[in-house]
Amino acid sequence: MTRKYPFKVNDTEYSASRGTILGMAFVVLMLCYGILTQMHFSTDAYYTLFDMRPEGHLGQGRFTIFFIIKVLTLFGVNSVVMQRVFTFLFLLLLAVSSTVLFDCLYTRINHSLGSVCGMLMVVLLSFTNIYYLELFLFPEMCLYWGIGTLLTIYAVKLTQNRRPLSWCIAY
Image (tube, rainbow, N blue to C red; front, side, top):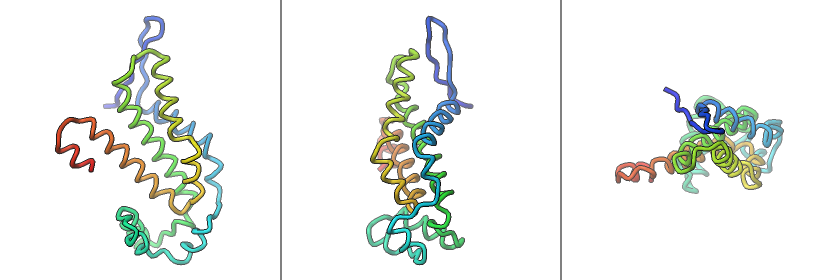
């Protein structure tokens, strides 16, 4: 069952579905970062194009990235060659992350149209800034940062629960 987000406009109640929020977030993110789905290369891309060994990430404590690269190399997937797909997936994962964050914050606001639109703008602003733009400049890492962002947002969602088990899982 899809979640609905009710809001009021002049004493008339409307609602937006989670899919609508996800779609709006994806459109905004595509408008901001869509041009970066074109092929572009960072200095690191030239190094990782021919050498996709994940051991360097393991030595730096990036365990999740290590396991993802290990699985991708088993299937012969090179993150530099597939950067358009990975950048698109990064945009999709950011849209899902912003929807989950909106879902976390929705219960804390007044359900008027202005509050809902303001909350959505604030959530989208947190994903459309110069710091996230910098992540797109290294296209060989986009998929991994997208997964990390989504897992971080889900950890935030778990900490809203007051149970110690949820906090342990979030950690």
